[in-house]
Image 1 (cartoon, one colour):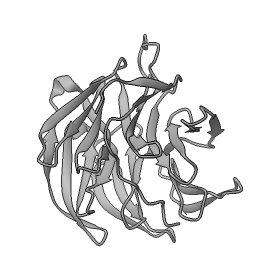
Image 2 (cartoon, helix red, strand yellow; image 1 turned 60 degrees about the vertical axis):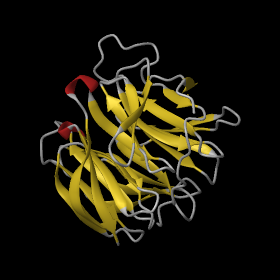
Image 3 (cartoon, one colour; image 1 turned 30 degrees about the vertical axis):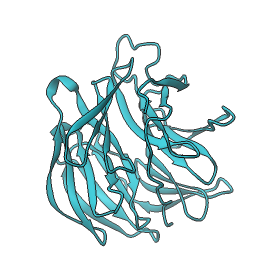
Image 4 (cartoon, rainbow, N blue to C red; image 1 turned 90 degrees about the vertical axis):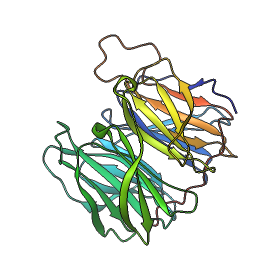
Length: 282
């Protein structure tokens, strides 16, 4: 395993987020939340694309029937393979926007929201089915962020960033119980942001204001740190044909003198072995 990073895409994303490997197309999807941009990157060819969205976008994931599902400011949108857009669930809430999202082993989309002012209790975590039904799972969230599942699907990991915790739940049939702490992030290390789970069941956590990605074992032991040359590290995900490369998004929002690479997409080749994620069943 290596911990040396490379710059996959040099960019100036205001709030780069949500790297997701699209196995069907061999591309990495990622977004700029506040820039309202959806990016794709093909590591085999270096080809990139950019699509602007009509509003702030919190996450993007592949769909089982082709196209993409978008976690948008005002709800859940669908991009069809022909590029057409339609709402799956439309629920505007003044002062609130979408944030991170993840697809569970059963193909449901778990979507996070937060208030623009990051007020405690202003955000949610919801479970969205393929037909657009929405069940609010957590309703007392400040900044809903990283979500992921253990290799066997029996555990769900979750981050509400201001808590400085990575929490773990028991997960069964779309329900979560038994919330407890997997790891606490000390104040000097920043805030936990996005996460991904690898094939060994370890949890990789991006550190906002921490210039790093950490890996924790299923027992909550810190066993690896990848340091980066930018302070605002937002999310991470495995990609590539064999899911061995760790892609990392970063941001530059609020930095008065951002480093040259702030807002770029980084990659750590051969960092480990990721899990194949199902597409959204909608």
